[in-house]
Length: 264
Image 1 (tube, rainbow, N blue to C red):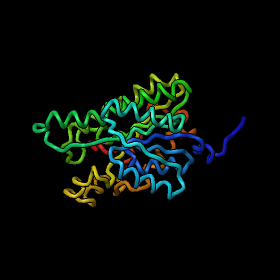
Image 2: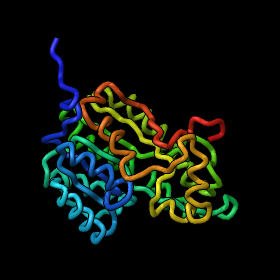
Image 3: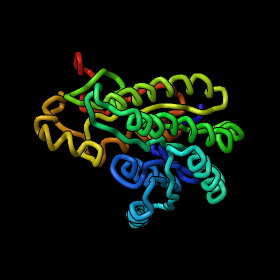
Image 4: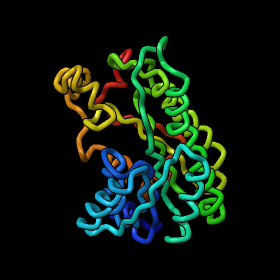
C-alpha cells in the first residue's frame, strides 16, 4: 500500500483556481490559501481597481495571480470569464464560487429589483459559472473541485436580527444547489462542496456589526468570537485538494458554533 505524506495531500502545485468575488474579504482570504498551497490564481470581481490591489497583495506573497473584471450576475460576462481564464491559463482545476451581495429590508418592503439583484448574483451566477467551468475544463478532464460559498443564513431562517430575506433564501438555494450538483457530477470526477461562513467582519456585514456591536455579535457564538482573516483558509484548502477527494455534497459551517445551537 502506497501512502502520501499529509503535507503533499494539500499541495496544489500546477493547478489553477478561479475565485469569483476575490478582490477582498473572504474571497481574497481563500485565494491566499490556495495560492500559498501552489495554485495559480485568477481573481474576478466587478471593479478593476480593487482587483489590481488584490493581485498586487497576492504577488507580494509570492503567489502567481492575475485578474479579470467581471459582473458575474450577467450571463455573458460570467461565461466570458471562464473562456478568458481558459485562454490565459489553459485549465481550471478549482472553482471558488464566492461572488455575492446582500440587501437589507423588511420582507414586506423588499423590492423585486433588489430581490432579483441578490438572486442573480448569489445563486444564478453560481450555476452559470459552474456550468461553464465544467463544460470547458472539468468534464473533459474528468476532474475538478467546486466550492460554493453559502452562509449560516442558508441553514436557518433568520439568524441574529437579519432582515435579509433575499440573501437568506439565496444562500439556502446555494446549499441545495451544492448537494444536487455533487450528486450529478460525481460521475465526472468533480467534487462539489460548500462553506457556510458565520459572521466575519467585512463590507457586507459592516452595517449589522455597527448596529449590534462586534462583542454582542460574538456573544451569540459558543466560541465567543467572530471569524478572522485565517478562519476559511483550512476549509477551502481541504475541499480544493487531494485531502478532500472523497468529500462531496457537504456543507461546512465555519461560524464559531452558531449553527450548532437550537435556533442558531
